Length: 385
Image (cartoon, rainbow, N blue to C red):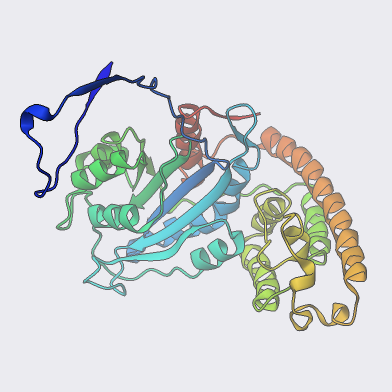
């Protein structure tokens, strides 16, 4: 292909137009190079849980508190494709509570996307019911705008919204929220707290199918049945040993150690079996506390132990050399690995025992969520192997 070379002339240049020659130069146009976008190094499962906290929803909140760790544990073995193990991030919103701001449509972000399981547990256990006005469209819109959903098409991005008032209440149209969700590749799943047909009549099913999500109905006042097993007491004892392998550092280290124990107690206060489920979660890869625990932090090759302020270490390490501290970390890491393995082995026996004693608890929050998660994960090439 040829391109025409032209020349610009200043006003003072005295050249006749006839004296200017057009010069055709043969040039080669390079072939188009296909640029392939680099595949993200991390995959995520992102779940936003939107809970109605009006007066009638105490049972829903109780189910969420009881079954959080079952949902977390389900993701410890998930894979995206054949090899990648995605990280789990959970966000929590409450809506429909008179204690919330009317200017914000009675919607509040309790915690944004986080992998800090202790913080998620703390925020969930802080919820109380009161009031109010339940605007599902507003709740969806707020979570879609506030949260960082990302653009990775391989991420599994899900919203679960639960409540019992008509889905189309409020000024913000839930259909507009559904359109936003589709743009962000987010699937909206709706959980009606009441009779299945009633939920259909009050638009909950329509709210789900607009994004390819699942519509579900639960008895939110149903008590969750926990089955005790011969392995529970041993797991609880191992959890105590597991806590002693944590080495706090940084300005928030001691507070986070205290928070870890507080959330252990919160789970135990509901039921011993809930405490067992939490202990199992703590033994998985999803329970990572690199921001305040030296054992997890030193898994990162870029972590600089020598740069730490020794005053922000536990008292027993403040007068130790770096070599001595490294030895202490290595000892705790070995102990933690051993304890985690023991808990996982007991969990397999525990689950086999439970399977022999129960049928699935149909119609509870955990059950319907996991059914939807497995179906939507399969569509993204996620599997449990």
